[in-house]
Picture 1 (cartoon, helix red, strand yellow):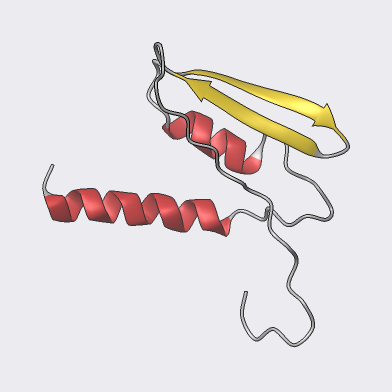
Picture 2 (cartoon, rainbow, N blue to C red; picture 1 turned 180 degrees about the vertical axis):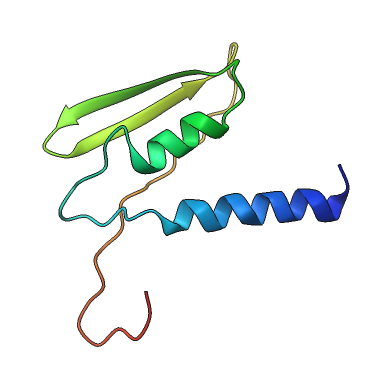
Length: 87
């Protein structure tokens, strides 16, 4: 894959990921939406589980092999405030 093709693929994924509504409140992140997208696009060798801690606190754990690196990504965002001019 060329550098340009890889960049386009990465930007397409980023565009799709940021399009999901992950506002908190109302804490509606579940095993659908962004988590379903991630599951669909991870290579099949990943073991993926969704853990629901209750009250809208949910996380996705994806592991492949015996990992030496952990990526911890925070998904929920604040809702748009009065006076904001853009999403």
